[in-house]
Length: 441
Image 1 (spheres, rainbow, N blue to C red):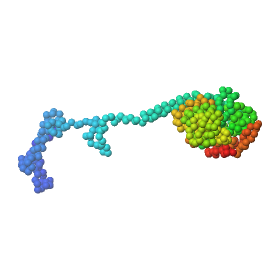
Image 2: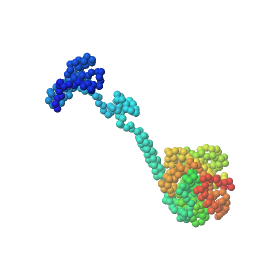
Image 3: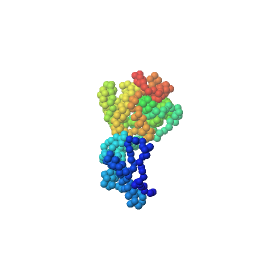
Image 4: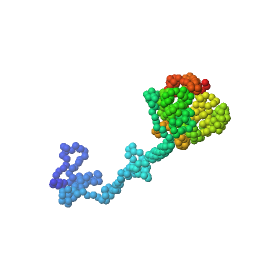
């Protein structure tokens, strides 16, 4: 591209017919001395001269570069030059996030930077450690309790369970929510079952989970009933002599139609150890009862009783349960149920350690046809039902019996069907018991 020539002598004045300003003559001839002087006089500079000077300098620089392009010239002394500008400060991501010098963004909450542990590290939750500790303690307790229970169960005397051959299971009333245990009290156990003594007391203890309570039913030992193993009628307590402990179970099931899950035999020595292991039982003794025991030392083992309410020792409690001459057998069984109820309450209230001590002491005296698993279940049943209280009754029921004489012996004749119906209703259906009034007769 050829350089432009600004020093020609062409006439650049405005023709008169195109002079639209009229009053202000403008001379566009930049080479005119007069025109330059007029501008200088008015503004102090000559724009044309400055314009020509600028382009002459540009043309000179282009010629010197030899490329036809104007080289870029930076003035380092210029205060706005990038070389003299302050260096831009750089920030890391954490600096931009936490630096107090950074202005907050829109809708950003400002907060002082945290010190100490890094924010990225999660704070440890103490709850799992606490939960682990609790579970460890529970596990230790369970293991200890299991060991204690197994220790007690290892001391018990176990008999083989015998099925009732005289009545089928379908003829007996049973329930998954009721466990019936026959408690047999004897003077002393014999090594030879054929010489087993007569049962001094027979009490059916029913753990009723349906109604949440414990029901106790005493069977009168002089009840005249059919004994299947002997194939004849005899007093109920004679069933032990004919068929042993399982013979008593067979006889009650046959005559009264209730299913019995197992028996527990306790002799007099076991009874005394149990009472002493829980610190005695609280009983109210009448004046007549106290005189009967105290005035007959040979009959009651030289035991003395005082009237009133106080805690009886094992020997005193046994003598109290054996009182028989001052009233009827119904009243005697009532005293027995009173003491058994106090024993059960005492074992429960003694706590785990006390219950273990008592069970460990009496276990060698216990004989049963229950398995270890059934005993464990029985303990749970007792814990579930004891809070609902105790109910008591006796069989035969009031109005279903009469005194009679058979073979020269005074016995109790009873209506078997009525007693069967009342016993089944009391154990499985009724949630409230009515005390038998038969003892007053």
